[in-house]
Image 1 (cartoon, helix red, strand yellow):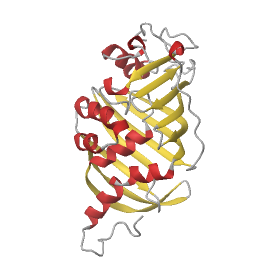
Image 2 (cartoon, helix red, strand yellow; image 1 turned 120 degrees about the vertical axis):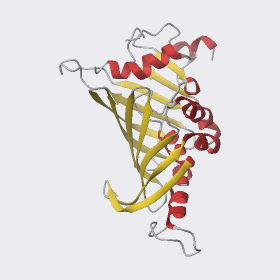
Image 3 (cartoon, rainbow, N blue to C red; image 1 turned 90 degrees about the vertical axis):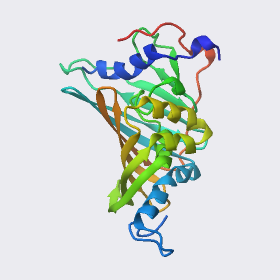
Image 4 (cartoon, rainbow, N blue to C red; image 1 turned 135 degrees about the vertical axis):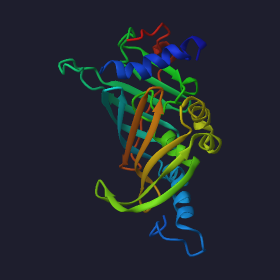
Length: 273
């Protein structure tokens, strides 16, 4: 793909990340110490850290995402739904933006394709023709696409947990009718980047340099197979606080993702709003 199709640098980041704000103005009893003398906290760290591998073993799933952004006195929520193939590291999502403050302006849903090292967006608006895609190199984003697209890449979110620095077992609960174990802790971005898979390493490395805080608080809900069922993470981005929630279900579903051809990718300048 030609260099003219690769969107890098601050202008695109502003259009994608800030623009999304602008438009709106298994171990049973995981909490107990293991029989081998390990502490409960050590056991919790291992369960959380291994959850990304459990998703890869599962193959794929459907997902729902929610991203709550708070900046100054403004709070908006961006929602998405789709499916993700953890082995191929590709996904397709539809992201729905909130109404304008007046409540009478609907925004067309944005279609997003997530791929190893890239984010493709359609119906992005801001001067992009309706039949064209915008391609962004995720390693060029200061957040590695953890928040830019309005929907956190499910595998990137899970691989961030490879950098868990501390975790504790909160208790057993249910997510969408499935019994899960709830863990709470903090993940270290630089450590996660070093331990990430090849497809996610550069993006998480960019996030480790770009976020104002290297530690990411999380709540992870893990089922009996060690798979994440729900993950909530908190990010500090510039002057905003972002809470990203990902729900995973229907494991093993077929995921059909076709990346755009070169001629379908917009090569022009993206407007700020």
